[in-house]
Image (spheres, rainbow, N blue to C red):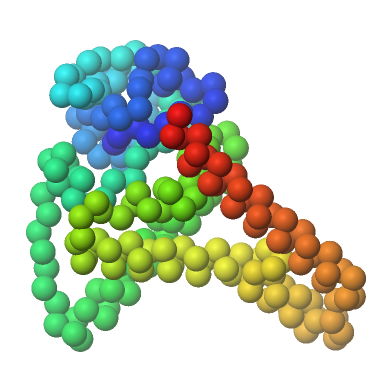
Length: 226
């Protein structure tokens, strides 16, 4: 678990945590992976804990208060597989599939990735988590790709972005396909289309929401440069 940033009123930031700190333990319990760290936080809601972090090769201990929701207030980094291997967090092995085996394997991986993204999306919609502050635009998307060409990482990330956009597109937001489906369902139930003015204003609101999200996400990228 590597820290990429902090929301407002962050217990972690106030306790001395810094960006790029790698969390390695909680109360002397090793937490190599984020799910292990999250589990330990859930066991110590409302308590003060000692967190071991690796900062530029030096391990230090920081004391921090856990909220009643089981959080300390930070955004974790999204690292590529190559970066995880370089940090010795994962030891990667390659699996070879035949064409017929690759189809179900790809399907299950896509479902797993989509489920993980939906869970992150829920956190973004919850202001108390501060996850919305970690939203990024084109710069963040570009940083997800490896610095050197690696065909598997490139196509995995391309496939993930396609899944992400497909999910976003079916959300019931006017101006997206999901919004059009809502109006079609309305027409099926009522027996006539929604008033033209209503559809027009809905499209305007939808476009405003999308443009606002675009500006906010890319604005976050710019702020991260300073």
